[in-house]
Each structure stands twice: as structure tokens, then as C-alpha cells.
Image (tube, rainbow, N blue to C red):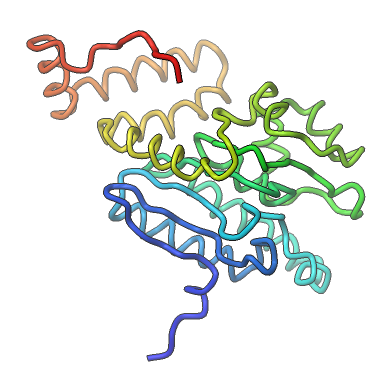
Length: 264
């Protein structure tokens, strides 16, 4: 049987309970084409069935330089709209799926690559990372969910600045803006991301599901509706068998007590 061509675009492996999903188009700076989106969709589906957390990574010198413009410029209008909606569908399965995702960022996190990174739950950037939204200079607009996800991460004014001026943002600046959670030395983002994903994979499954799916919806509600939804979710998570077991372990033996952070 001939190899699936999509297997050359996304590499997939399990690291314990964590799925490592790697964009594998280094010659194209891991630019996202329609085929990449479909390959990513397959990887997400597989991860949901066998992993407890996942890490997104890019091979080569860059995480992802964004949309494959060579493909995009040939599309009729309706196909461009449908293509954007497909990105929305696939990225939403990351953001509001069954398992938490951590992105290990390095090199270019540009345009659609930033949109992909914004769909995960935790972002780790190494010292080589740079962020940009050059759509304004190219005569286009974001189409992979950035107007919602990136704007909510860093604010619409900062996002607009990046799009209007072509500003390139350092990882330290992006951390201050709220778009990155962790900074590492060059080459260390993947190990840190795997460490964080492994930690998240140890959580109760339904608690993780509630965090991924309730928090963004509560954010979109009024305060009173959000508080009501919180009460319901709090009650639901507390009655699962896993929650009862973990609470009993804490009460009986002090398992999992929170400790003060140590240096490093």
C-alpha cells in the first residue's frame, strides 16, 4: 500500500500519555496548506482517542510561517471562505476538545502560525521565537480565527498594531502581552512543553474537559450567567469517581498539597 501523502506533512508519536504532533514542512517554514489542515485534523482525532494531552511543534528552524500563500492566491472567492471556515473547524477541535494542548514555539510564529498557536491552551516560546501578523502588508486579512483568539489573548489594539504596521514582536514582549505563558532558552521549548503536557495529563479527565470547554464559554457569557454555569460545572466535576478518589487521598493523606514555588 502506498504511503498516505498527508503522513509527510504531520508527524505523530506518543510520549507516554502525551501525543507529540509535529508540523513537518521545513522547506516551506511549515506553512499551512489545505493538505496540512486535513493532516492536522487526522492527528487531532487520533490524539483525542489515545492521549491525555498533546504538544504541537514544528520541525526545522520555525514553528509555522503561516498560510501557504502560493495555494491561497489561486482560490476562487467561495473556496477561500470555505477554506477559512475549515481552519476554524479544525482549530476549534484543539481549543475545545477532550485534551489539553501545549505549543512549543521557536522561530517564526507568523500569520496563520500565530492563529494555530492561539488555539492551544499553553504556549512555550524559546529565545528564537518571533511573532508577526503581516496580513495588512500582503493585502489580506486573518482567516484562521485570529480576530477572535489572538485579539482575546493580547487585545484587539495590539493585534491591530501588528497587522497595520507589520510589527515583529519578541517572545519577552509577547509574554508581557499575555500571548505566551513560558519562556525558555533557545532549543528548550519542546522539552518544557512536554513537561507541562505530562503534568496536565495527570489531571482528572473530566476536570481537564471542564477547563477546556467551560472557561471559554463562561468568558462569552454575562457575569451572572457565567457564575451559574460555574456552579453547575463545579458540581458535575466533584461527583465523578476520579474526583471522589482524589479528594479522599488529599483529606486522608494530604496527597497533592500545594507547595511554595522554588527558584527555576
